[in-house]
Structure formats: structure tokens, C-alpha cells
Length: 219
Ligand code: HEC
Ligand code: HEC
Image (tube, rainbow, N blue to C red; front, top):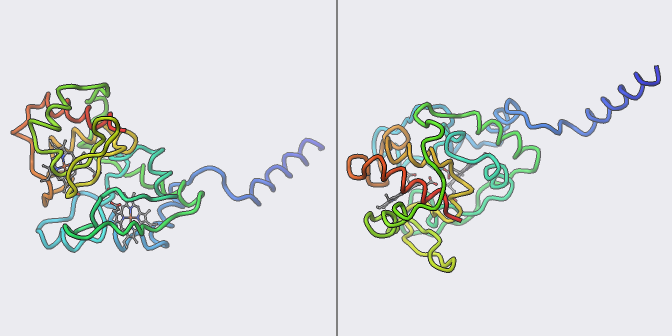
């Protein structure tokens, strides 16, 4: 009897404090309620067919978010978003205003579970071995124009590189290495209207893995 009372009290306390575990279904409901849908779509495959479709977008597509991002990073970013793209989304001459909506703790956790449930079959696990990759580094800074468009940590932590693509500073915590490779290998699955040149057919498969490993080590 005493045991039952304690259990009942425990349950009541948990209910009063609200769920402490994340809930993907609640995240999905909140995604619509918080108007995230005004700028992001979450049902794949890719919808963009023309340049106009791409330019009409107010934010990046999220239908493969669970394959693209690392869960820990995503939860932290939703609660405290910091600019990823140096430039305002969809522009080439305006600074990113850094005004992304912020979520409170439980909401961020629920939204993270919802977004991590959205995956793409084109991303296969275990394709990229994440370790220091000199070949990948040479490709990134010398052989290919990657650094002309992407910021990355250079010597002594100094950030170098162009602004037209998303910054890859911190990519090692943000992106799934296997997604980076899949994106280089089959860009049309993720970005049918391209803002980045296609390297499939230019880089050998092995070198796509090398450069993906290099990006995946970026701090
Ligand atoms: C007014 C438009 C707008 C709304 C509303 C909005 N976002 Fe965003 N979102 C953006 C833009 C623009 C970016 C790119 C930010 C950057 O690069 O710094 C972005 C980036 C993201 C990213 C990272 C995607 C990537 O590929 O880099 C996630 C995850 C995200 N938003 C989730 C959400 C969630 C969850 C909500 C609802 C709480 C939301 N967004 C509401 C415009 C919006
Ligand atoms: C001409 C400029 C340009 C070059 C060169 C370029 N990129 Fe990109 N890259 C972009 C743009 C723009 C995007 C964003 C595409 C989009 O969201 O539609 C992007 C996206 C990415 C992303 C995803 C980042 C994110 O957070 O969404 C990775 C990773 C990446 N590029 C790696 C590379 C690598 C590796 C190379 C060299 C082999 C390279 N890029 C060369 C412009 C470029």
C-alpha cells in the first residue's frame, strides 16, 4: 500500500513537471504550430525543379535533416542558433542577420527528435572514415575550389575562405560525414537546383571520401 502511494506520487510529480523525455510526435506538432513550415519543408523527396523554386525558398529544406545533422549539435543549435551561412539565405550581398527563431529546452528536444526521424535512403552509414586526411585537405584547399566558397579553420585556427557557401567551421560537430559524401556523390537527390558545382564525375569516388573525411574533421 505504502509502495503504491509512493509510486502514485512519483507519477503525479512526473506529470506535473511535464515529460522529461523528448517526443518526436510533439516535435512534429510544434513544427507546424511554431510556423517553422513557413520557411522549411520536411517531406521528401526534393521539391525544387527550377531556379525560381529555389529562389522562392525562405530557408533550407529539412526533409533529410536526420541524415545530414548530428543530433547533439541540432538540439543545441535550435535552442541557441548561430549563423551557419555567412550571407542571408538566398542572397549574395547581404549579411546573415542571425535572427533565426529560438526554441526553449523541451521544445528544442522534441523538435530535434522529430527532425532526426527524417532521413534519406541515399545516405549509407559507414562510408567515410573520420580521421585526419591529408589528401582530402589538399583537395579542399588546392585541387578543387572548395575554399573559394566555404569558410574553414585554417592555420592556427584562423578562419579563411569564401562566403557564398555555408561556413564549414565546426562541420565536424554539425554534419554527418556520410551525408557529406552522399551529397558530393549524388547532389541531385538533395539539391536538384544547384547552388554548388557538381563534383560527381570530376572527383574520383575515393577522393570524395577523402574530402568528406577532411570536412568531417573541421573544428
Ligand atoms: C522566417 C523563416 C524561418 C523560420 C520561421 C524558421 N527558419 Fe529555420 N532556417 C531559416 C534560415 C534562413 C536558415 C539558415 C540559417 C543560417 O544559415 O544561419 C534556417 C536554418 C535552419 C536549420 C539548419 C538547416 C541547414 O541546412 O543549415 C534548422 C534545423 C532549422 N532552421 C529549423 C527550424 C525550426 C525547427 C523552426 C521553427 C521553430 C524554424 N527553423 C523556423 C529560416 C527560417
Ligand atoms: C562556387 C561555390 C562552391 C564551391 C566551389 C563549393 N561549394 Fe560547397 N556549397 C556551396 C553552396 C552555395 C552550398 C549550399 C547549397 C545549397 O544549400 O543549395 C554548398 C554546400 C556545401 C556543403 C553542405 C553545407 C551545409 O551546411 O549545408 C558541403 C559539406 C560542401 N558544400 C562542401 C564542399 C566541398 C568539399 C567542395 C569542394 C570539393 C565545395 N563544397 C565546393 C558552394 C560551393
